[in-house]
Image (cartoon, rainbow, N blue to C red; front, side, top):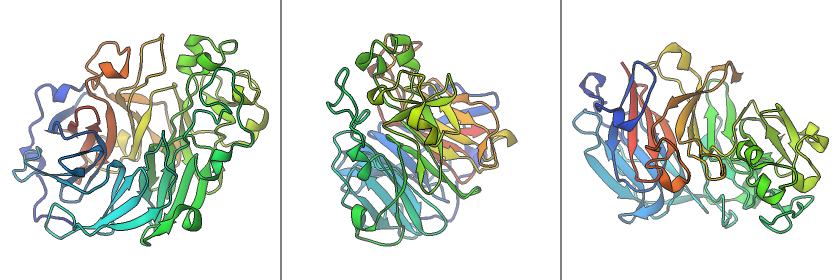
Length: 409
């Protein structure tokens, strides 16, 4: 794996006077590692502090940006672009850098002592559908040789007439055969095909950009993007205010065979129950077939757009954060006429496999606005999370390509 003989030393780090524009809990500070990198999505940091970030669009003929700090001040002074694909998923695993483009999972061998991987590309998984929406392929690994990949549904609620007022839902939804869930593959095998080699590990998940394998609990977790436009399509059932709050963004504990109910059901955190969607005869209160679906372990307000989740295992942050989950909320577009929300990193405390308390905003100020009417108003939108070797928390932004490092001293 790419490495150096000396990791960055915390006592050389100086936080930015304004914490890079972020507001943080007392005792925390932040610095800007790099800026203007491109549309930065997910992020990985190796044991020596080298940083690898996926890009939603190619920049400088690369879809991965690789960062190194050679002066131990926490700021990247060596920046290089690599790879032929753009996308979201990225992970270091067994001396390979894995990358999840919208249509392929590929990997590159890491070279000892070097920042850039070997250019020899291996296709790990192919045969994914070409989605026009929800095409991102986030990835994570367990300890038993498995690779997990989200395959989002190219749909809002599997309507017969896509995003059309009053349209009913297809029943059964044919998209669930190859979409709307998390698939499992062999981590070390190459040239796998979704249909021939993939296992549908869990279903009924509209789109989970945020997935993470919790090594302590040996369990997969995901945070789902809920469906949109309840009031727009069913104004007799949902007021604009209800539509801005519903449905929940669902925090999921994902086990083999889990079915979280999309597109037939959604979770209502205000009623703390899963209800039938209006496309399938629901009215916001009827449960029906949803009684047989799996509930989330937590429901967040609607349309916050969770784009990454990270279980914190470091020892830099105070004890309350140990083994808890950080979630990057990318920010909403579907809360009008109410102000848009999200654009922050939240924290959820855990005890064992489930939350031990309510969620809280951990890092805020990304949007740079007192009130966001449209995502275009936001200066930055948090997207990816990673933990550094010293326990620092890294956050990416996919608007201007900024990377923050959050520390506790």
